[in-house]
Amino acid sequence: MTLLSVDDLAMQYGSSQALFGVSFDVAPGEVVALMGRNGMGKTTTIHAICRMVPAMSGAITFDGQDLLRLPSFRAARLGLGLVPEGRRCFAPLTVEENLIASARPGHWDLARIARLFPRLEERRDQKAASLSGGEQQMLAIARALMTNPRLLLLDEATEGLAPVVRQEIWAAIATLKRDSGLAIVVVDKALKELNKIADRAVIIARGQSVWTGRPADLTADLADRYLGV
Ligand code: ATP
Image (cartoon, rainbow, N blue to C red):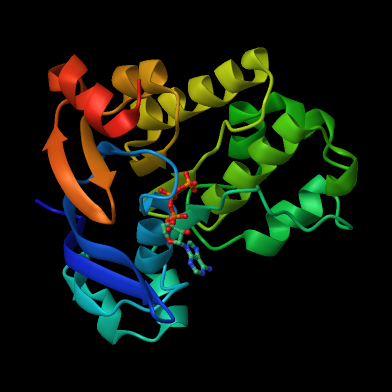
């Protein structure tokens, strides 16, 4: 069974084409890593799925529904939980207010968030603006979870964080995979961590998906050619 299916997606910003044919599937409970060098189209792919940028052609199906035919507010309600690059939270609101503002009915609530991120529980009455970068990232993930998504999309969730904080974020993602069975699309540069957590990897190069497989099957040659490692 397929939860998300992206088929030959193309997209352009004004006259500049960014995607030329991206295709991949995500099954329920599966963790799929989008990999590739900077500027190759990973963020654009995620934004197109979340209907933040318009697709030019191709198809995106989520839970059997043609996403590109739905108005974007309806698409969001189907259960796409985006954790955007740059962890945007409502800075003047407290941690708890941020979480409540995102809440939609389902099994994620404040108590469950507190178990996943005890640090957020400790800071629940603090304004988001006063949190550390790592805590803001936890809050961004927690906000997406409070929408009770069926697919979580994480865009560079560990970027710019101290190694110890990164490990906390990876541990939380691993817990989500193990305990909640949530499907996750993850964009990150940490290959070692992606190899551990992802069931499948999709390499995006120059706006096209050029390889899909198990992370364990990613050869040194592919990594050298497409990931620059
Ligand atoms: P990164 O890891 O740097 O975020 P990425 O793989 O996510 O890279 P995208 O951000 O999707 O890449 O960018 C794909 C292409 O689209 C790049 O050439 C980029 O310059 C271009 N692009 C991205 N956003 C815009 C925009 N708002 N307007 C015009 N071009 C854009």
